[in-house]
Length: 371
Image 1 (cartoon, rainbow, N blue to C red):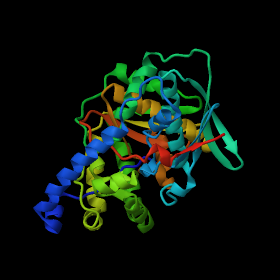
Image 2: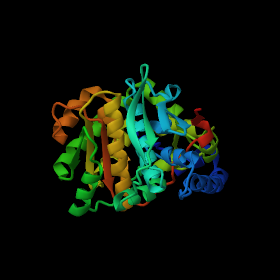
Image 3: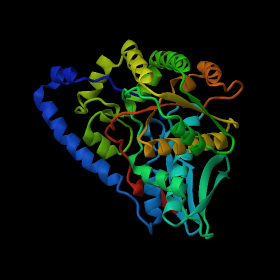
Image 4: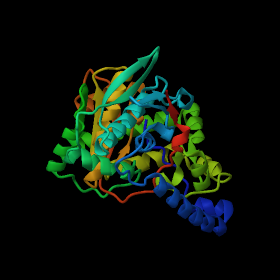
């Protein structure tokens, strides 16, 4: 889920393919996109509606930004179920990232519900062979504590910041807060801040990246989810917006050509080496249960970590290549001290400026009202 997907399209490629006029229009389109992204992330205030809670849930991290979820609302609460029409079967053949994405979303939902006076109890649900999660509203007067409130205010600001960081270490007190924030039953978090361990994980990320880029089906699936232009990102409301990876926005007729020209393993390897070497640390999440329920739990823990990081001014970005390539998972577990467990997510963290935010589909596209 939530993997890198940097698109190596540079300004020189844009000039070669279309001239200065394209770059001028791209700047105007980027301004329109900035207004669109800001409107999606308008802060939620109490009292709120089911629609408001769902909007905040959809701001969660999710693989390839496919947003593979449907929300069912009723007087009893809000249920989230998988939308298998939005699978990524090449990078995620067992739907692991899909269920992690559901976990991230239900955690946003739970945090937003507490903060706006509509607390609920989260549980994993089963409907036939389909696993999901639900938030059942309760009326016990539960209120948000200081940590929950900070995570709530971070929801519209969280992003996967796919850029080089500034290399500063995270203070030990903040590392402790990150560790504690991600405490979810059955999920273990390993924090790697020693440079040798970070370097070992960097090498595994590059090995995973090389393996994926040698797979034509993987590259084709990735390209399918890229939105090269602001207009495509706004219209589709999903996918990997190029500017959110620190690359220029390009017209859709140029973007795929630039991708084909520039997306090469050596350049990607160099990029990930720089990005990981500039990071303060690596977080590896592992659920005890290798099942949809365990993956949902891993997503909940990861979302809490990312929101706490955002509240602390720390950026995060997924580098999941070595957990997506099955043959590298044992090595990831060894480096992270998780022998015998499947590592679910790999996340780098550190300090950097924000990038443009990713798009989201309208709430109306993902919400179903139950009787």
